[in-house]
Image (tube, rainbow, N blue to C red; front, top):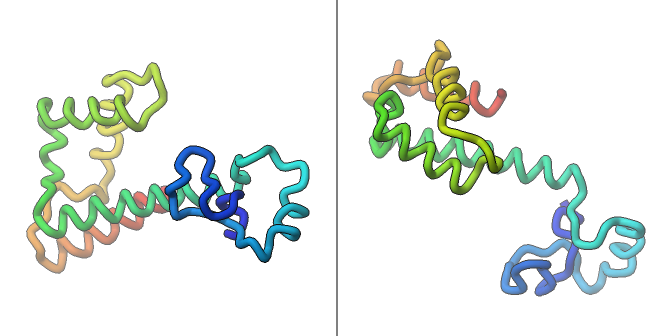
Length: 141
């Protein structure tokens, strides 16, 4: 993790105010040796995978928390107005350029068809177990 952010404090390549950094001043000589011939501020492949895995885990747990708290109804993903709103956000912020709603709809439909997908949440022990299973399934995909 020491080279996850290959820059010292205050030297973030796009946001100097960012608290993220990967090297202390005392460690710069070793850091320079470690990063010798590495491309500038680009993070290593392992760090990119770790960031992606963190994003997946946090996203899944956010959905789990939303279902558990009653803020999210998984059945809303069955209705076109809500689905289209989710697709609009995904296209605008998360998916590669050129991805259309039909492609996202197909992916969502595959997810909703899974036996483990929770189609509701009432707080019961069965619903909690089903939600935990869905969380495990999503993170393990």
